[in-house]
Length: 269
Image (cartoon, rainbow, N blue to C red; front, side, top):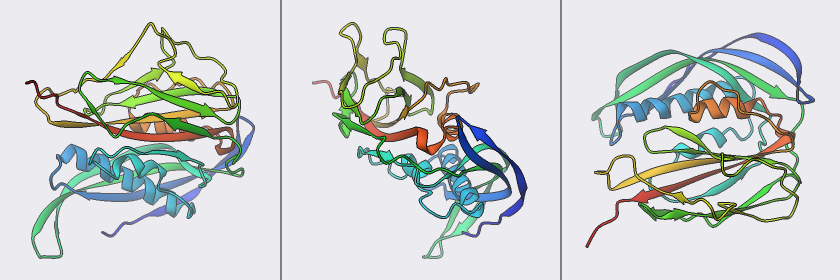
């Protein structure tokens, strides 16, 4: 699939949480995804991710640009916990969708398929500093698949002192902040000390499907660990808004884990 891009200009230089960076404007980055076996809305979401990856590449971020696509790469329900070291020093801090349109493509067999193409304008922030290899988290206890109403529990062990935020995204794309919450306030975590979730016996994380008729639903989790307490200030809480917030944190001040797990319909006997 052909993609067209235009780099406009270098916008600014500055600092964020002590990090040096420069911002680059990219216009007309495109991504496309076939709408086969998925809804047009799901295809558009995947096409948006492709457009963001394309904008990063065109802005000169040629290293590892796969982290934002990780959560879209597998719908089978297989779990993974990848701790991103943010080896790419560039990330998208803002984007606007210029166009979203369906179009007909031809596969290798000559059959016609519909795909969704998304065109965006984006601001790519390139940091002068890279990731801190000594600052990481170990995620344990998350299974590939859960039955509906099953309890979710897991552990996180940080390699350095820091602050934790855990975002969950359900099958209908709705997002929520799992931790901290009213019953589990945020606090400074200490290096090398395993933290079990839930952190108190007073609450449980009970998994439920959005659609009672669906057989399997895939949920996503983004685990963000930062050296500084960084409040979430975005007006919305969806996948791309969280990535926008995350993009404003210098790579050497954070590490991020991406997890996907499925919730299966419980068959009553």
